[in-house]
Length: 168
Length: 320
Image (cartoon, rainbow over all chains, first blue to last red; front, side):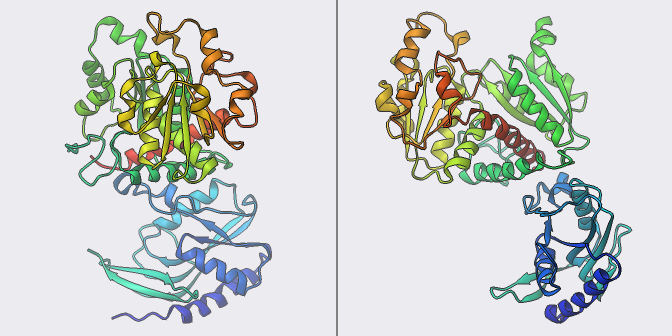
């Protein structure tokens, strides 16, 4: 059974994102992908003492499986309390897998303007990419069989942990 | 397979056509209203378009004229990235004698994915839903005196927007109820969403007698009907549907049932005034009320686009 310590990985992600932000874009903003990525972005934003608020983005309106699965949850979650036009964006998500969610989230981002750049930071890269999308920063890189679902959960006092489920 | 008990739902209880609000579970209505909230914010973006219906063809089939409803359906479909075709059916095939189902078969052969249907005969959208291919979805945009479910849903959205909670409300529907598919859809929506006090207000000739069975209080006196109401839904006097002498005159109607500032003062101070449009100033509503601070008639139009986007994306995402 796979053991992933989400809190320890978060500390590594924080290091990585601090380095990304220090690497030349002082006005870069954090945007978390709903829902797990949004928790991470919110916490990173506070820990790294960024000004203003972190953004939240939903991939639901741009998903490519709408035809077979209908409208996904969280469609109304997008909250971007800053201009996107000309801005350096650090997208944050919990798990990077096929890359389809990231593709959809980038499309959603573009509905609000043309960013100067978009970089990706994730807690776990589990392989299995189906699109040419890579994370600039991943706290862990693992290989999981396609039958397993890896999801981030947050308990009442804000602590993060991973759950692994077998797909039905 | 259509669900035998309700042809609008598939075997998982998901909405695949919208034909009538009657008989839909509360959860289905609530989900559409929630989804509409999402699309309201899309209309404020730099890019006012989402790709959910990209590559799909929506056919607007209006066997009966309606500029406003057709336009809002067209905008809604375009903001979902669908290709929209408006067919002025009233002046084309049917005028040449083609039957309704033949028209539908021909349009299906053009690879339609969704039909938005307005028809003078009650039940026409239902008939189309039963005969079209399984992947095709049907939205009723008003059929005869039967139903106008998207107007009903946008009215529910408007009420929820301003009043938040349905469970304490008094809602008065005023005017020509007997000819109004909007009134019928509103009453079903209000009932399903749990409004405890629904009143139908109008003269005996324009209020059907069987409404009491639906839990609606019938009032022939305007003052009694709107007293302490939270929401007043005014209906248009349907001149074109009125054959024979059901009313002495429009002026007489305004005197008894027209909504004036004096009559509105009987309702709660924060009551909202709604109207499906187009309004007849000085027939069912005074200009001072239509343009007044309690009027939400124009927000209804804006909400109507978001609600129609919600309906179309919901049914298009569910498989038969």
